Length: 324
Image (cartoon, rainbow, N blue to C red):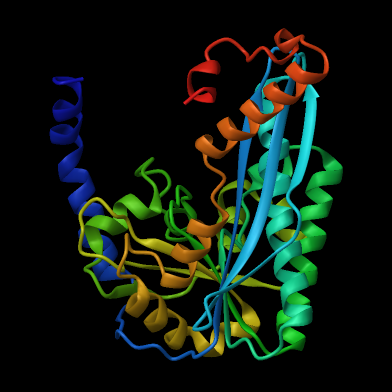
């Protein structure tokens, strides 16, 4: 790696810088201001953790809202699920991912129904879904996610709540597809825009659904979302290690585009993420330490009741953190 990584960088740098220069010339770019145009803001995040025993896969999923300026939290009882160890691990993780996203939108809906007066609601996750979501997990879980997103967007529109999905680790190539650059590069939108955007700049909006149709002639999962979704990228930090963030907006929130961009930029003083989402992430995080504590409590209970703690044997390689 000491030789391969520098070699790849040197070989690819001219093309990367050429594309970055083209993006600055061909993309409408806009400056953002550090201002907080919204008073009552809520961030929504979800978390999950998987526990692998020698008998079964187990997972726990939770979602939470964090509201500013009150600092109050709202959440439901966490959801758990389990599958036999013979069930493929990758497929189990896919099910957990889809159900985690569904739980996020369901929690946001419950919050909105009981808490009027929210000006801006930030979702930690996408509103624009790639075609991979159409094959991840089980069909009933995918339908649950679709139903959750549609109900959430309908509630926000009915209650006149501005909403945005914040994708902090974007790996998509929607903008590359949209600009017809997919034959020229395999790089992601965020990496190219890290080279092209300066801190405090954002791109114009574009349609991820249209971008997908340019390259695959289909946008199966997004077609199931009733409300058109648009996206833009913004660079909220001058740290070279923090890529631009993608922000997804439903069509009914486009009138607040500048306010959303400025609010996210103005409150992204920690790792380039809006403050409400940073706090939601801190509160909802299901740590390995917590799962270790849960596991040890289960061991204690089984030990007292049956004396057969070997029934709780961890999957090989997974026991290191359980006793931490």
